[in-house]
Image (cartoon, rainbow, N blue to C red):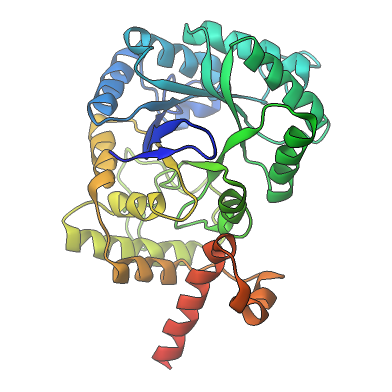
Length: 359
């Protein structure tokens, strides 16, 4: 397992992490799985045996039950591993039961610590943007938690580019705890993060953890054009996440994954993970699993090396549309691109060259 520096912090984390979204299985999260404490402990043991050192959870997952299961499963390993959690979503029916206010964040963190059975959270995320609470208030609350020893590092999740940049700027201006990482959605099916979030990460030294790197199973190889998915798999119809804009493009991408997987004698999921974990700016992927077999297969992505031509095929079939101002910059500014710019533009320029050759 490779260990990578998390942003500009001194923290080193495994390139693959393990998430608890499948733990508990209550409420809306019942669709993701219902892993109990016994199975969670087995999965965590497997992860630790594969040198995974970071485990992700959130108070929103199954109404806090996922945190309880994570804490119980890690009870005898609390000194060996790093734990992340998150706050923002509603935890009670009161007027302050959601958001990023000082009131909610401090109460949420203390409740998470109790459920986890820990005295601190290593990396504490603002789980979603809150446009009604000033970032000054949210970051000051995180600073208080840091000074109290309840959190070690802070992060942001599901922020847009300008929102993330504002958080970094406010932290620097007011000398508050600054986010060291962002947790984002980024897959071969949805490469939107290449527009702003990944260039921001490279430019500002912000770590990146990718949630649901298999697009909630869409890139597992089970969902193919004209093929009925297995009975135990989740189906596209009725899903809230992920939002799929172009189902035909998804099917095309899966077919390329299947072909590359056959060449490596491995699963399409493993190929998708190997591609994502080696993208510029990406620090780690947060895996989720309902079965040990799924987890073991996903962990094997850490040792899968794709050929450059295979990477190119995946980039081409999943190519992003160049929206403004990116199409303009690609045409007129390429001679003066920075490393951050190249996160988006290098694949696009390679794609243009490939198209030109075909003509």
